[in-house]
Amino acid sequence: MGALMAEPDGQPLLAEQLDTLVTVLDLARSGTARTRPEIIRHSGLGRTVVTQRVAHLIDAGLLEEGTLGPSNGGRAPRQLHFRANAGHLLVAELGATSISVGIADLAGQLVAQQEEPWTIASGAEATLTEVERMFDTMLDTRNPNDPQIWGIGVGVPGPVEFATGRPVAPPIMPGWDGYQVRDRLAERYDVPVWVDNEVNLMALGEFRGGLARGERDLVYLKIGTGIGAGLISAGQLHRGNKGCAGDVGHVAILDDASVICRCGNIGCLEAFAGGAALARDGLAAATDGRSPYLARLLTKGHSIEARDVAKAATHGDLASVELLTRSGRLVGEMLATLVNFFNPSLVLVGGGVAGAGDLLLATIKQTVYRRSLPLATRDLRIARSPLDDRAGLMGAAFMVIDELMSRERLTAWIGHKSPIGRSDVVHPVPVQ
Image 1 (cartoon, rainbow, N blue to C red):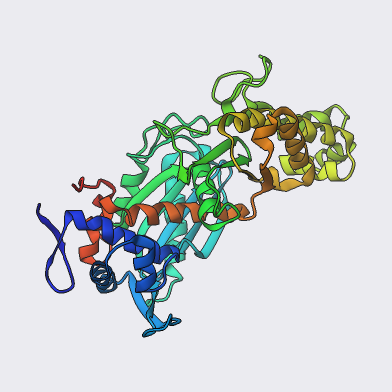
Image 2: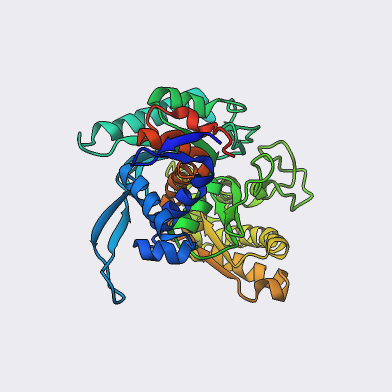
């Protein structure tokens, strides 16, 4: 078997040794093991192997030694730290009505963040031009000594074929079907790029850096303009065969032909319970006089949005209370089915509509607990996502980090000490 890269002493590192290298790196970067003895204890690897792998990772700039750690009777071991600032990442979350961008370190922590209103229906060319402008603005404000950009992660509001980074028939993204998002950004910034559905990344952000840390089975439900779910199953993000797992917004919940969903079907959940549906029904309530509060906004030239319905409900507007309660009940009925089927330990609810008030979340909870099997809800927690607008950006960072540090991809760039100029690592060569 041929050599893939060299040890610090010049000896070749063989393919079968990659597993031990990645094991040591994962233990260090997760904080599970902070010294060589701890790595030996957690991994079961021999002292010599651990010493060699640690030396390799230090030479590559991924680990560094710190102060002496506590002693267990012998010589105190040196602390080991993952170098989260060895590189930085550009991350973007594209929503239906906004674009968020940020810069993150290799531990998934955001060091900068910016958000602007935008309509995803403007098309791929215009939207990605805006993303590039926002990226460039953030890069222009950095200091010369700041870490270089090692990769880019992007979330979009539609199904994505993860292997190619291309959206596939996204209902609310006209002109995006099959667009080469990855290739465009990789060519411009000369780093590896990964693209996924935005709700998948929100789930990943909470799982790795939020309230869901330590959970194994999680549902992240986003209620915004549309509705979608991200699924963590047995500690792994579940994308499905073609990347459209969790597209619950298009589950049929009503046999009502009067409302046609943006996907072209009738009866879809988001067509009756999402943010666009609340805005539509709120406007109707304002127009026909059922909602005095919303009617006053309308007479002042204010367009009715979902957050206006939520605010009206907090002021006791009965029509708005009915709209939010109905939305919560419909979402809860869908979620109860998902809870029975998937049996998660935690459901996190996020998105612009979910953060608009307590009534919607309370109704969702009540419906889920009433409609789900007792065993499925025995230890179930349902809570609002605490990361809120950071979840998707952090998830995009974790996506890139996990891919870069994977066994298949680490070998393609670690010899260069960074993946800069190695955009091809998204297509790993199988390691035997």
